[in-house]
Structure formats: structure tokens, C-alpha cells
Image: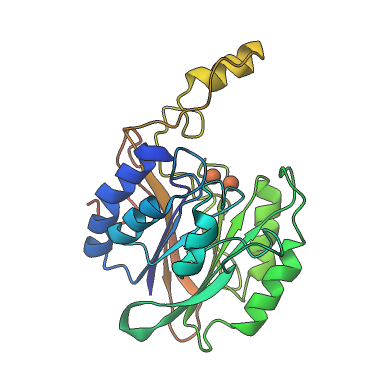
Length: 276
Ligand SMILES: [Fe+2]
Ligand SMILES: [Fe+2]
């Protein structure tokens, strides 16, 4: 199966990049299943129902969220109406929606998607992500009723993300990190056949500070004195993520590569797949 995961969509720049690139990538690469992280799509904080619809219409089969899952209040009710949106399993016991779900990919194949929040350097104390994901993977072994499984580990520390990758190695098809908005260069298939990258990077404008217009963050870093609000960039977005091929019988990843298209960032080194 050909799976594409796109990292945190940030503001209008990210949304426009996804709208422009995802339909082309989906068609030209013959993608079977697409997951997009939408936690910053609406004004940099959360996801509105309208913006969720736009991402799904562009070609996402599933949208994952993150610590900003419910920054847009409408999501508190909308997530119960739209089963293609998955929030972190361990967000809060009372959170609406689901933290994992089995989806249908092309030709009736099944894909498990789960998202979990890490604990290191996060603003809030979330429940243990390892025992949470353990339960889900035991219930849905890859190569069983689900042909592939993807875990979105949403947190700050690359060490915790790598830990999650190894914890799920041999059990999930893909473990991919989100939240930091900066792609890491460690795409690999782990020994047990789990594709991994510590962070997929954001879909947004990279001439920024993690997707926000750089003036205000710089002012705060340099002077410690804020003057305004953070504003997400509105144009020149790059899509960034992870492309994975998996074996339907075993659920193992057979190929993984980092993807980035559009905006000011040109692919570093050889294009991951034939350039669109
Ligand atoms: Fe986040
Ligand atoms: Fe984010």
C-alpha cells in the first residue's frame, strides 16, 4: 500500500499548499491512503469544521490533531459528526471523538490510524502514551484484519518520538512524529519493519518561525517584549511529510522517504519519487 502522511498544516499557507499539492500527489503517485495532521490549520491554532472539510476534499482520508485539537471550539461537537478526524488517545478522559480508528483504503484494505501525545516538555501532563498505544496495537495487529497501521506521535522531544518508534517496531507499519513543525532527516525502516521519521515537518511557510510570521516571535526572542499576536503566514507554503510503501500481507514497511513539495524549499538531494 502507498501511504502519505503530511505534517501539521499551519494557517492559510499550509492549507493552500495542501489544496494545491495533495490532489496531484494522490493521483500521480497512486496513493492508497493519506493522513494529514490538521492541528494548526485554522489561524495556527486548532481546526475549524470548514478547514477540515477543505483538507478532506483535497484528498485526505484521515485528519489527525494534537495538543491544539480543540482550540477551535466548534471541533468539540464536529469531531463526533466527522469520523475521519482522530484526536490524541490520551488528550483527556472526557475529550469527545476517538483516538484511534480503522479506515478503509483503496480496494477495501483496512488501515488503523492512532494518535498519541508525548509527555516530555509538553504544556500539560498527559497520560502515559506507551501503555495507551500498546492497547491499540494489541487490538489491531498489522497483517491481521488491518493491512497497515500508522501511529502519529505528537510531542516535542525527538528522543521520546524515537522511543515510541522502537516501542512500536514490529507492530505498527508507520510511526511518524508531528508537533515540532521541523522535518527531521532520519526517515528509516526500523529492524521490525516499521517506517519511522521523528518529525514529518509542517505544511506551511518555512520563511517563518514554525509557520508564524517571523517578526513577533523574533521580537519576543530578542527583546523579551511582545507587541502583538502570533500570525500564521498566508502564502508560499511547502507540503512536508512521509511517503511509505507497505506489504499488505505482513503490514511491514518496505520503503520510506521524506516528501516535500512546493514553496521556497526545493527537495534536498534526489526527489523522493518522480517530481510532480
Ligand atoms: Fe502540537
Ligand atoms: Fe503543530
